[in-house]
Length: 277
Image (cartoon, rainbow, N blue to C red; front, side):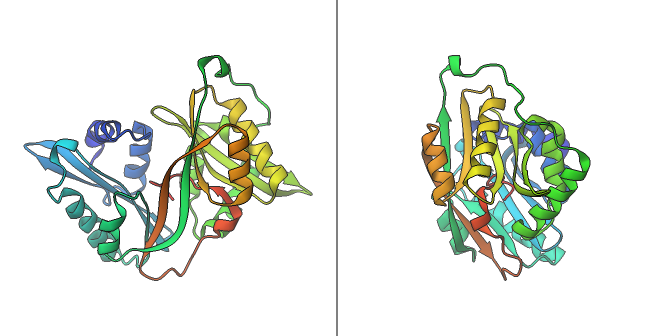
């Protein structure tokens, strides 16, 4: 895949009802220029798959998309096999992805096993509720960002600061941290997607921090649709339900190869997104 294929990738995720924007596709390509792939037919892109490497500890597979007119021809399988082949060649032994129920049988067949469950929650708000964003927290300064990046690396299992910095730079209004005694008790980032604003990652050490972060996100967003890919822990589920979110679809985090650098899912209220981890 090249930068010239971004409009084609955006076309495919739009056809599938996915929330990615051109900025997300550029994130994949800028950080993994040789690890993103397309399938073409008569010079038309009919399928995609992406990879991202985190410190050579773990690689993420995402955006396995096939044009609806070309499905059930093995294109998704070929693209997935290509990503695995590429990652094997780079020497990254651990591969992860977040599977929908539709894709899970294919991933299982290729050697992926379940790690834990995730659930997508949606909030639909009437237009009258989507008011002008109002600032409720000061913007993060560089020293805070570096502290959060280090903290996130310990919780996620690898450094992904290149992604978090990109999220902050593009949507600083969604980047928030809650401190106590000079130490972060919670943090979150977010992005404006194709049809919805997306909260994640969302980390909190307790209910108070988790609720404050969620309220900032709700206040800063002016969109009618909001998305949170929630870890199934009681605090985040309770807070989302109280704010009117409803479960949309299940996701399963799956891993192939040794899981030498596991994340700490009990520390997160929500992931960054199934395409990023």
